Image (cartoon, rainbow, N blue to C red; front, side, top):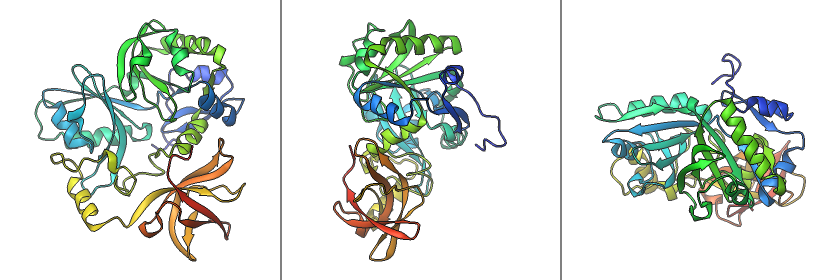
Length: 369
């Protein structure tokens, strides 16, 4: 969405962000907090060492109903949704017929439907693609409920202790990538043991207006006060996910990349029945990958990789940085990028070009932290 021509949307927490002095930027068609006055580093360390809370209500949510809901989700996504029991979630991706990635997403199996969580900037495109995929399929209903659902991510080692004060659901019994339907701070919600930070944490999906949102936000902030909970913005969300080597749609994955070269072979079940992009991905695997998404760590301090910088080996360009920055935990430049398959092995020394100068970096196994 072009925010210059379309008025930005606001989540139900916008007034809270403003009151807290957040720096607001347009993101995915929404006015979103990038950081609060204490800064990204404070927010980052709060999540790694204590607890932080993110408003991620800009994300999209789609409900899939009908007798053919599973068949549809199987055709739509690369992972095997038939393995999902009620109460379980799975990371997946949708591909075009040519194998390029439409979006990455979460798939939840609820009692009577599937619940898909997609990226904010892709909502209109994703829904359109889902309707295309459903063409000719009977008894499949696609409901876009993005505007109805609030989403707060409470992340960090103290997230469980914070949230347990507010619910009778035994949170420690919920495994990673599973969820419970319960009540927290008096509001019915999905309590999902998921997140984009690599720390223990929960994502809370619930309906209600700004008043309901504020009551939940304030209850969590009060419960987390003893652990020095911090509100966190998109800036910390990016530094946290980068340290864990999690891909960001629009940076590391998009229509020009396919799941196998993006390191998402583990979610791509080529053995399952036909799905969108399967034939293209089978061909790509048979032919062998020509490039791979790798993580790399700079070998000297203060050199910061940025998206779009080029990567070299033997004086020849072998790739491009897709995500990069300083790791707050390592105090060192880290990045991700696609490189020629020949330069993708862990331990390979490559060079980052910064303003005409080359600086050495080592290809490393992710996560970085």
